[in-house]
Image 1 (cartoon, one colour):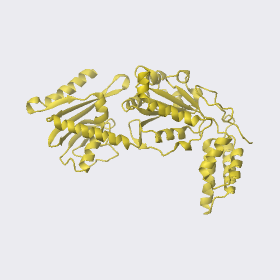
Image 2 (cartoon, helix red, strand yellow; image 1 turned 120 degrees about the vertical axis):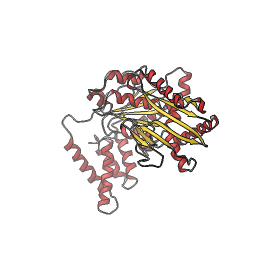
Image 3 (cartoon, rainbow, N blue to C red; image 1 turned 180 degrees about the horizontal axis):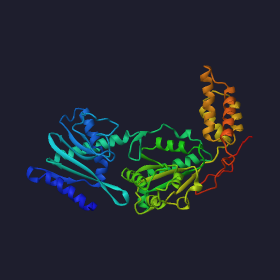
Image 4 (spheres, rainbow, N blue to C red; image 1 turned 30 degrees about the horizontal axis):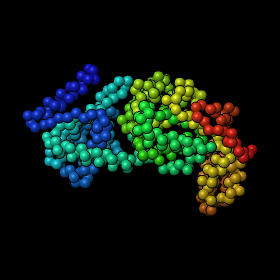
Length: 427
């Protein structure tokens, strides 16, 4: 059965159950309004019940993507769980029947298969009092605004969410103004929709953070997520990823635009036989590309990525290269983590001696030094830094392979001037 025919049957069936002769008025929601209101309805009703605003019984039947059928007869009946499958899920599909201001309202939401593995959402509402419905919409819109202001979570490809990290920008230590350039690129895009439209530019952007592990890419991602007010959607790229999961991630982001979509470890795409490059390219800048989505990807191995991803703006418009930290960056991180617990001379000594360390190793040097004093129940001292550094230096040599030395990558797209990177290096 075609998608259009299936949708028409759903609409006809809904209308036949709510005849005009019985006083019902039916309406089909637009996609834009449904994206704002429909997914929030269960959580909104739960809040209203908690506030004693809605005392009447609310019945519903839900069907989920991952389980065949789940039913809730009311908002209070088990097995309702706030963070599990239940009324707070945004991806609900089925019908909710409730009363508002003493007038019945039936709200139905269905997920329809779309082109190229995507989906669309159909919402139908039946009511008997237009004024009541209008006031309900106003309440829902107000709830939507409240929810967006207190949104502190990152969505994991529509399957769950985690708390946003708390990472200030000044904890991201990068050379030559690179941190400010990344921050400005992100913030300028998110506040410039009107300017994009006035210049007839597609409102989308792509950023690639490239470089060896432990040099600050993940910390940068955390700072971006912590300091933006838009939704953040994340798609962890693993070897079992397929085209459907990628399309799903882009569809979720498109429905929540403007937002950020994170694609971590993009190079792992090269290891998956279930992912096609053409599908990814089409999602980034093809006919199906959604506007209002800022894609931020990371890669530890840019050499594994196809040139079609790296060398063409509009897929990844800016490519920022992360290299091993220089003396200045190592010293700044040590000072940040040490918090005046060690002498400046001790910090400078470690910063000079730690050439070849990643930022992750530098941070661990400070953390291990602090843990030494904790274990011995005393105040930190400079000797702790020396012991910690020597231990990690041995660990680095022991874990290194003959071909595992990290060398600064050649420039791809944007790269900061690396001329001053080795300032103050020691052996």
